[in-house]
Image (cartoon, rainbow, N blue to C red; front, side, top):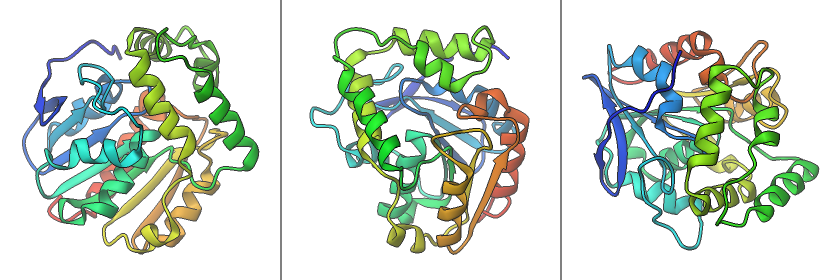
Length: 260
């Protein structure tokens, strides 16, 4: 698959790719990426859903909106612009946003899918990710080599090359703001998970060292309608590297959502 740039339209203060008709399915990307990272899912689900894939603030075509980074600022940028009855799927930091949207705006969410989400990082992992965030200077493009090495076994693969371009071609200040939020969050609270009143999918790659299958299982165990799954031979970027398995898991989740 190729990840070519797609047309955008306004989504409140943000910009978003839109495709298809039907129940709204919102796809939220991770730090340093852009809506095109969901290309395989946009193409698959536009056949049955109104797909809305925003660029998060400071990413893609969306402007920076935040001076003091807080997760709720990213949530608020989306919440007022989304229709009711949304199925929300997020990857990595997008999963953080999706889960917080479901917590704070349950009237808008009929299902949530958290892909490669973090939950209760170890002290060592938290120290490492916070050090990476602190090293960003907000003015120069990050060196993507270490990030890409964590994400992809084959750095020459089209998906790795696409991510390299997004990481180096984006807004450095927007990247630092988002990465700082990501680094200092530790996943949803147990109370928020226990209060989820909608179908909740927790999906990750079996080989993801930072968003582990154990994290997904722990979150699913707390959510009343939670299910957990791990894709074999996949790591952190499974929506791009393993689209068929990702889409199959999302279809099973969507079938459980009201009016899917």
